[in-house]
Amino acid sequence: MAAGVLAALGGGGLAWWKNQASDSSGDVVQVVPDFWELQWDRPQGGVLRLQEFRGKPLLVNFWATWCPPCIEELPLINDFYRKNRSNGWQVVGLAVDRPDAVQGFLQKLPLDFPVGLVAATGAGLARQLGNPSGSLPFSVALDAQGVVVQRKLGRLRPDDLNLWAQLK
Image (cartoon, rainbow, N blue to C red):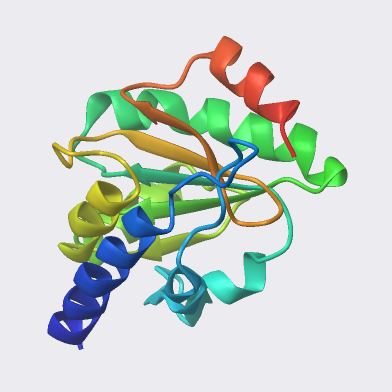
């Protein structure tokens, strides 16, 4: 299954970059529809489907338990989610890590937002969303239409999230 997801991401990424062309007004058109078809296992069981988050602003954060800046920013992202979910914001954490490491971490630091286990496929998706190095942490904000409106490689700061909260 991982190979199929990786192949789909590769083709979807190329289409996504082509669809980032601006229209005559200078506005970005849209992201590739295949993005919303992606799904991953959840650490607690079940499946995280991106389709469930379509139609509202979405912050996607790529992280790992072995990444100190990732761990430092997770409480900040959790706070952003708590404060902004009533305004329609959604947050998804995508763990580029082993399931057992993520499960153990979440027992110590539970998060209010959903987490998906992307393992090795996460780096490819992060690249397609504008992270050429595949480094962590990496965050992307999409508006309600699914257009990428902000990207941040490296640890998020409160000022970043305060700015993003104003986007929709």
